[in-house]
Amino acid sequence: MNYEELLLDLVIKDNRYIIMTSENRAAMRNIPPVIKNNFIDTGISEMTQVGMAAGLALRGRIPILHALATFITMRSFEFIRTDVGIPNLPVKIVGGVPGFLSDGNGPTHQALEDISLMRGIPNVNVFSPADEDDMLKGLPKVFASPSPFYIRYVGTKPVVEHSPFEIGKAEIFGKGTDAAILTHGLLFAQAYKAKEILEAKNKSVRVINMRTLKPIDESAILRAAKDCKLIVTLEDHFLTGGLYTILAEVLLKHGITADVLPFAMKDKWFKPGLLNDVLDYEGFTAEKIADSIFKKING
Image 1 (tube, one colour):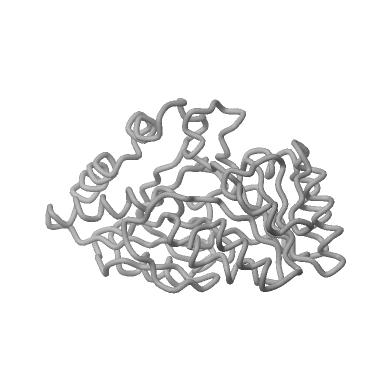
Image 2: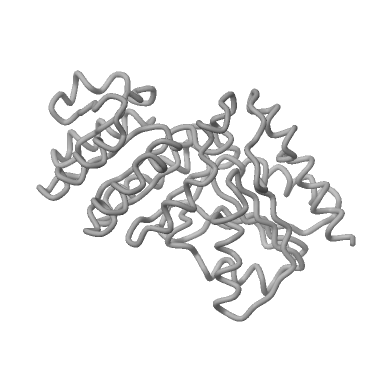
């Protein structure tokens, strides 16, 4: 099953689901003629899409919205906060080409603060799947949740088969104690490859796919802080407000300190290019991540 088939199956089984978009049909080109009145394209008007979705949700529908991540989160922020977050409506917001997946685009189209914005709204949760397999495993439970959700759409092919999904529960690979790499979304693949590189150098590493960044799996973070010499945060997001900030909040809440190595965009947007070139130029390849971790562990 792919994403389009998942949406079609949802609507066929439950007429409450309404698929919406702001002229972003790439992942659902074939379903509009099939589901007919359960599909709405508002055109390039993300704020209108959110407002319509809130009205539909108040009437018992479950809208699933689609737009570019940078526009649906920033342009529509007030509407999501006021019309969806405050009344805690079951609106699901799918952001396309988030983070580095907006590879060929400049700063206006780079969603590097989307997680910070969305998790800051009370009642709005955040799902950032590692790849297509992780996304398809998580979406049925995310879509069925009674609360709003922001979803980073990631359709990349998996490097592992993911375990069954639970909201608020991280997925852990390995029991390493030298380093724990906390990550989410697209960069999970690089984290997993970095783990293999480091293990070939006799380093003990675990990778934690956070899956949902709100609610966050505090227990996975606290175990890693207790067991591991080094905590690494890896994200295609600004350093402020994302996983690095979440880690700091969790550790401070529990009165714990840790040695932390963050990989994130630090007060700048990334240089546009092909995805592999972006990862290399900005220092987010598995090889560069592993090299930095190895040097940090060895002092």
